[in-house]
Length: 262
Image (cartoon, rainbow, N blue to C red; front, side, top):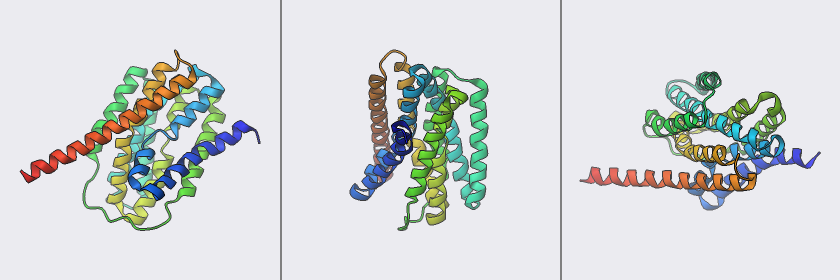
């Protein structure tokens, strides 16, 4: 097995495993923060830059940025369907929603400016549309880590092997294919109920602000900088966006509590 193939098979699963282990050792707060970072799309775009060149990876980053609304459509459709139906129908409706949004992306072929606007609009506006209510407490159980790691490995391998045939737009679009959302949503609904799954998906959508920041920065800088510099700055932008969103959420909750007490 070549070193590059081994990297494709192990990089993303190792990152997923590291995030899970962080949650076990230092709590769900740190794991949730790390899971919100582009731990799947980042390595995929990095491998595309390595194999296909910086220009291809920059265009794929625009495709991934434009795919953010498709992923959020999947999450919202799953959450709203799951409160009334079991997971098979919720998954089917969510996949149809993703496919419709992805087809629209392929039809309009948005540039970086429009892709950025669409991504920001999705992660800012759509969380308010998720169903709310008291969710069941989390139960101890198998977090399906093996399935998440396998899904990450297969997604990475499939996209990088087929990238030259798919082209950058489709490669970027598929880099955000909701395999992780599917595995985690189905497992959560089966173990903790629909409202817990909806809360999980809402959190994942809110956390995708880091993916928007990462992909937008990469698309902007990769044609002009070396790959190492562009990916480093994109990662910094991703972390800052994630921290900013977390701080805003804490401020909003504190303001709401103060208002209710007043």
